[in-house]
Length: 368
Image (cartoon, rainbow, N blue to C red; front, side):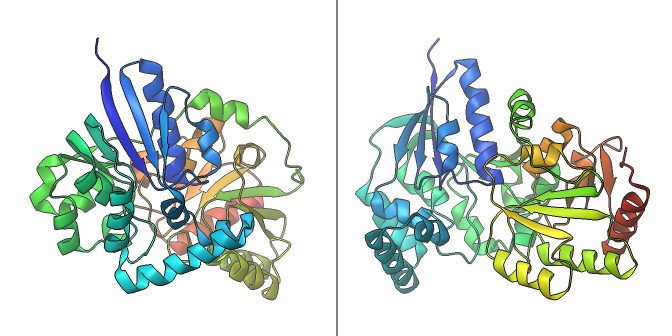
């Protein structure tokens, strides 16, 4: 049987939920022996080592790679030339605009092959200069019989512009949403495209998650009630600053027999660390930084907590369920769709989240 040729476009394979879901998808596709897969990844990232050997990786050229790599990572890995080029691109994108810049990148790096299907796996981040490009590449530069775009988050809460989306998704044959809730929101925003939207849940490789969870001992204090959150540290979607406020409120009521670890990097990590220290809870909420394998922290915790303002179908919630750790989460759109009552609790609002968490810590018991 002839294999189906597929081109998947990705911004990077840095540590993150969308990147994890893509790697899992590639691993599960590789098991079937039905696909001939090319992965066009603009930047780099730690998860490149996780890509199955049967997948051909096409790397972005130097400038495209720098554009698709978070500025902080460019700084951390050093190299004055790369840093200077990245800063030049930051100026150029503000002068010329993202679409013009990415079009120039793609004209310089064409893929001369016809595919059965091409997939834009990363949805563009609104009002962001660099977290974009896969939609444009697949739409205008990929030669494929069928074109698919993926939607990983709540398009309304993210601020998708309707007029821009009408043009962006016009040339796509399929629009894949990661949950029924995301599809509902997308159809609400673009009802004229409802007939080509569908739901495909994020996939997992459970045996790998369970094995990785046993690889090291993070050394948590078992005498405390251990809470873990794995997320990008940002105060808009993930609301990590609000986690600090919850800890301040708990401490004001004399509840200090817990430790809340936040695993992840992000734009607000330094600000939130200072916030926690200034508010006197630096010993209760610990920022552990980014971990390519956060699963041992989840396995060693009494509770996985997610306090996001909105989500699509968060990978970390599914991973916590696979590891077997109870969950407490805010009521993002797909929460009831994703979390069975036997696996955790969903808070109706901020006060309900606090009440549920306080009861769990005070009694040192699980959600189940």
